[in-house]
Length: 445
Image (tube, rainbow, N blue to C red; front, side, top):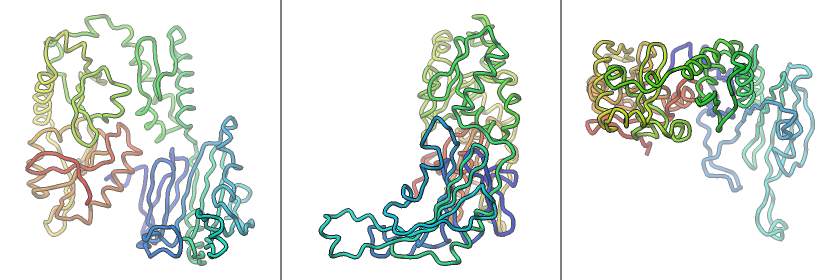
């Protein structure tokens, strides 16, 4: 959970504001709608709308209608991103009727259509002669703003039509769309700009793209994921976000053997544990020490050096002549010392002295990793009960919820997913359970 400064969603009265992919736009959803969001699209439907399906192949729990809002960066070299690839025939096959309608009050920047399409019958052709083919009703809106295209598609469940109130509430939601003043580029465009910036400031160094989303500067390789997340929040601060990171990597190129491979005595008090997504570690940090944990997370180890940190490489263990477990014990001792010197301040949300939820007061690079220690487990269980749910969307933040209030868990799950998609240093969108048995993954049965 985040406070009112969370960049992904804000509330105003009964309405909630959501930000689209890459923060290209925001829109406001009224209280009558429930929303599901991922990195590519936002889906809306009426609150509590899970009525039985009509005659069709739909599931028994299909909603009577749904609206999906999808955004894409228009690239002339990629035909699938142009407006023509999102016509009615593509989105709603077997069109019976289609006609343009008066668009929202956006002038020439938005176009709209309404129509009816048939259900795509998959049985033998002769069966169609003896079976009425159901239809569904739809609306389509396409917005164009600079290099961003937003496609909104509304459709009824098979066999139903769209009532005027449904169309009106969806149009009201779309009318609230506001595009960002500065549009963030998609990942590949961002990486190209990083390469160009690096070559401009460090022309004597070899700088080139590498891997799925990395950058190689001479012999060093960095992953751009966290830089990109920072950039999405402030696309007009590209240089201020990227240049310090590039400068740090360049300075590493100038370090001598003693600095790159310090003795254990020199760094013993600076070794700290750090949670990291296992999937990302396997691709970008595979040569560094990591131990598996839960929820697809690994425990990695860093040398905390002033304003930056670097991960512990397997070659360092060989030089220090210690094992991974020895390193883990050293790091946990340092984490315990850090926790004593920097007590965790939390905000407890309670009702009638009944604690429901808890969050740290301030972000810190070692907030989430404190969950490795039994001391924090004991404190959380004293406040929230014997069993509790914990979300760790990023490195600097976590949220804990009492299992005595299961109604909160689904709300927290949605917010953890949103925060995981938008926060810096993301960890996981999955939930943990802390109990007397330790830490495990939460499974919603």
